[in-house]
Amino acid sequence: MPTLASKTALVEETRLFLLTYERLSNMEMALQALLNEVLAQRSRRTRTTIVAIIRSRLLRWNAPTWVLQNLMAFAQESHLDALRAALLLHIARQDHLLYDFVQQVIVPRRQRGEFRIFISDVQTFFDTAQKEHPEVGHWSFETRLRLSRGMLATLRDCGLLKGAVQKHITFPFIPEQVVTHLIRLLQAEGVTQEQMATHPDWNLWLWSPAQAKAAIERFFHEEQGV
Image (cartoon, rainbow, N blue to C red; front, side):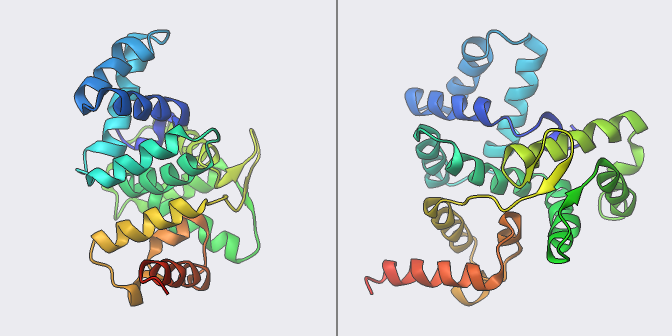
């Protein structure tokens, strides 16, 4: 598929998968249950697409066990704030086009004090992204329009944008446990404490390096029992 954001964030469907995975303790069984039982009211084609997207977003990169355990814990919470924040992180990490759109369009616009985002902004981004993402050049107008809408809907569902028709950049609420999740993820990838605050992943939440640094220092102080 051209972009993993083509079917919106699928927050509820992902929550159902994670709860099913928690119950069955087997990834493939959980995916099959999602396909054949949990989403039975959807068409077979839609269910197959949803399962493929969830697999690509959460499983194909061979996530450490603790990452999926965290996500299952977020899915069990009565509100979806933690799951939304974590999905904003993981969807963008696995969808490089979406990641670059946030970094190259949304973050600079927010820094300039501008908050409106239009479908035309995604289309312009597609035009300039063809060097790094050559697949964009093969898309039809209809595909580009559908994916533009899907990307904006995904970011809205994950809390980075708001608005059903007109989209505005907003600061997503990031629970402390999801901040810890990202810090542990960066640690596992070999990012040092000194480098961590300037890592571009924080931009997905519109966090400044100073904001990230404060959270990182708090985490390491607690880890060391200070």
